[in-house]
Image (cartoon, rainbow, N blue to C red; front, side, top):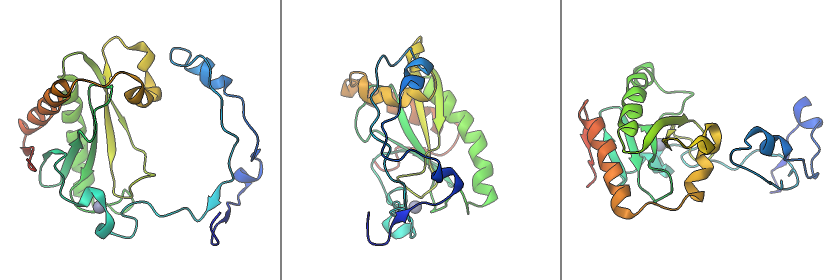
Length: 202
Ligand SMILES: [Zn+2]
């Protein structure tokens, strides 16, 4: 705990068994297709205020605001980045506005453009050979800059159903570099066929 942090206080927090090791059976029973055995770490104290996320104070220290060789596509409002390191899923990419917006303050024109883009990203990812579905996730613990994740679920992979898919990226054997590059190219070119530019940073 840093000098300025203290345990979060709310009726929700007051009832939590901090320090206890909780039973993971709901995970092994709820996602039995993926997990046989899980041991949870003891529940840690929940301290506030939390450490600032990347870009919390503005675009100066914000990864998605900086130019990146990993931008595989962009248009005037949005960008898609991928290919930082090769994982086991056919595609994992981050979709973010080009300007420094948080979900809390993003203007309506930026938000409105996301709907059609979501449809295009899904189609692009599903055009990769061997991909059945494109899952979307919005976690916002690492970067304050609004971003969503697109994850490709391999065809027939019933063990990758649902939220558990994200874990498999690090569990499955990493793709060969040429396969990963071909998948990036397919997504980038599919998106660019509907507007915007593929690989603006290359
Ligand atoms: Zn930013």
